[in-house]
Image 1 (cartoon, rainbow, N blue to C red):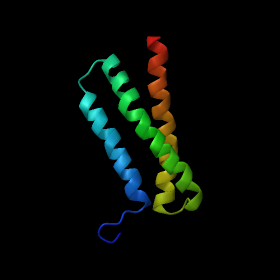
Image 2 (cartoon, one colour):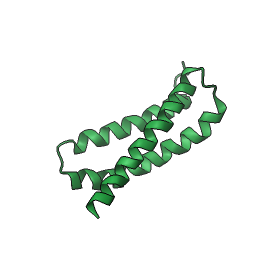
Image 3 (cartoon, rainbow, N blue to C red):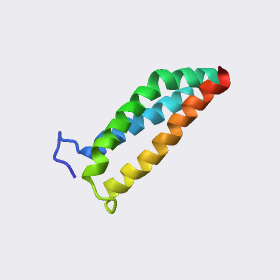
Length: 93
């Protein structure tokens, strides 16, 4: 637990993940093209930040602790999400 006003490594990633979920909620009812455009504009920059966080954090934690496990899962999920974003572009273009 962090002292009041302080944030830890996990807080950074959770804030970024919450942003991604918020973007997805906002475009849930949109067309494929609207979701694609919103993801390019909103999600991709956040994914880039999240990826940078993961690359910085993963070597600093062990795979046995919760943060290490979360960083590994994030690395796998991030790769899948990026492929999904770019796969749509290839289908449309």
